[in-house]
Length: 430
Image (tube, rainbow, N blue to C red; front, side):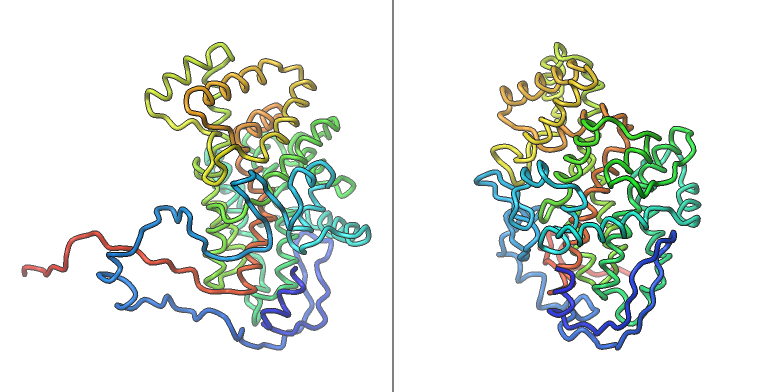
């Protein structure tokens, strides 16, 4: 995919690019023949009196852009009629069953699964980019321990962008080869950053990444200082794949809006992290675990749910903006949760899970989404509840960057209209 983008967008010719080295930060050696993107969106908003205002009063308003199709994509397909999710045409359940997370990342960026040789090269490059730059560590240390981990993660990604001097090169923001390197760099850095954040919050020293471990095992090693049993690694791998991509969700759309201004990929990802932090999006998996902690046991689920509904509280982890008959990812993640419950001998966790799910079905006929099984699964793995959403981000970095690059390739500034409902024109009385 990334190679095709440069040809389609006709942005530039890149010569003598030598890629990324094995040190802490990326190094480039290249020459660029500068050429303005012929189809790039002009660097202005395009406001005019004829676009917006009184003439818009008869337009239908779609709150939250509900039902609005804003663009095409080749990255993933969410079908609410069949409750199916496809990554580049592959059912996500098949990918979760048979593929590594690295293979899925490659698929989302390139459009096809890697060959054996391509996978080896991809894994080798990712493993060489895992160590944090000292300046990124210092930026993380400057964030108060009391801050939410998503605030620290947002700060770290913004710092990575500030350290990338190639953004200031001619067409450095849109260069597809550089952007592929940036995507792999972000993919490699996020586990180290997320683990650093959790360990710092626990008062523990950071652990250096290991280049002899695959992505999932290294992530767990960085966080806990040991590689857990295969059942835990596999459940974690499944969760990353299921969270990797989901079409034009709020954070992905945020990333595409930012990319549509021709801002850089780090800015787009930083904005996406901000959107993901919200409890109506990525923060829901944290809220699920907080609810479990509040309920305590399965026999209290019905009473807790009745009280929560009477108070008109949102029951997080249930319902979905797109899926109306159940999130297609839930069965696969629940299977992983069941294996974790058996491994850790925590049947009471699954009993509570089933009781609350049953109560929501009986009272509201609402089914769970992916955040519902992932919350207790991450808890059993040993992650802090506040770290759940950064884990989501570490997986979704693949989808976010794929969408940013797709936006660059056929860009049009995303600029919707609004209908003004404030006071009529008035004048100062002075």
